[in-house]
Image: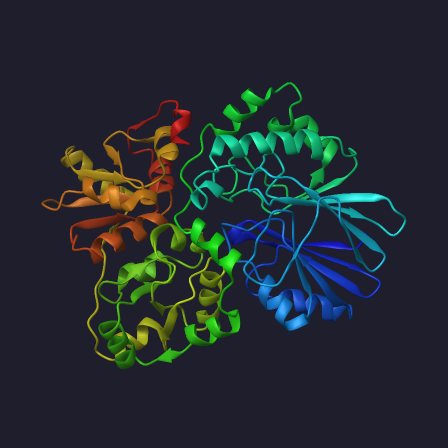
Amino acid sequence: MKIEQIYTGCLAHAAYYLESNGEAAIFDPLREIEPYLQRAAKSNAQIKYVFETHFHADFVSGHLDLASKTGAKIVFGPTAKPGYEAITAEDNQVFKVGDYSVKVIHTPGHTMESTTYLLIDENGKEHGIISGDTLFIGDVGRPDLAQHVIADLTEEKLAGYLFDSLRNKIMPLSDDLIVYPNHGAGSACGKNMSKETTDTLGHQKLVNYALNPELTKEAFIKEILTGLTPPPGYFPQNVLMNIKGYESFDDVKKRGTQALSPRAFDAAANETEALVLDTRDAQKFSEGFIPNSINIGIDGNFATWVGTLIPDIKQQILLVTDPGREEEVVTRMARVGYDYCIGYLEGGFEAWKNAGMEVDAIQRVSVEELSEILAKNPETALFDVRKKSEYFSEHVVEAENAPLDYVNESMLLIPKDKTVYVHCAAGYRSMIFTSILRARGYDNLIDVNGGFKAIKESNKFNLTDYVCPTTML
């Protein structure tokens, strides 16, 4: 069977391209559709359907633009009520893609419309399942997201539906089927996903805790809900965009990639309520940046941190990027629904500095310098901005935890009347944290270069650990 996985690492996301006899289908596409158009054009195939496994929370799908540009029909599973033209399929309905068949299997639980698509080849042999967020490799989809959109759908109810879907719809299928999930390790849509992105269903029945036939429904619900942390704030906003519709990505890209001179950029920042977002790496940012800008480096988990730390997806944003990476940044923001970038600084920060505009900087110290500082003054304020689970796994004895994930609460822990040293795992998150607080008037934070990785490798610090409670995960 001709099926290809198109994987995007920064979102741990998998879309799928299915092709037979000149016809193609795309499953769960990302916002920018050019890769799918190019793939179909390469084989001179016509995209006939865009299949969605559910209304996604962690990204904005590209189904509307694909349908507009190719004439493809959008297909959702039973109970879906999109605000645009689409097919709401019936359970067990079959769609033809060339000589292949795609069978709808309604598998509510992650969301109520969640659907698994069974792929059948030209000889009638069942090949695999595109499982969306119903079944991952090593995990299943978290059942608490839909309640953030529909309050009556409690996580316990959804977990019960998921148990029934897995036991009655998925587990009876053949062991030799290949499982093609929507996400891999690193996604916030599950808690225990494997780094592998495909597997056989038979192997998953043996190793996936959620498919353990000995689990009762009550035990399954308890297991599946244990250790869940609150989802990023942008998730319900992305769901609504996927349900109601959204602006064409072409328009979003055109608006976001408007080049602004330093003077025009400064004027736009002063005349609007735009956030100045600097996407350069932490070291470059620390050495010089536009006052009140915040740093989220493009070469990290960029989209996830944008979604976690910028609460309003309609927030206007002005970009400072490494020259030549403007379109990449706009694209990665649009994937998670941040469509209101209004331009970027032409020539980057160097152009701003050369124009004689005001600049700021953040001091960084090495772990060796930090060790000397702590030796002279054990009362030095040191904050670890990693997640609670990372902190409880192992941390510097003198450090207090102030997770970046909850920056508004963590900010309250930071004293303004003395110098504060901040570290994360390697320096990416601590610079984000420090830049946010700097923009809010905290001028006393110093970043620790290299973070906990360098701290541990130096053997100069007292470390402690204890078992992390599951609620901290």
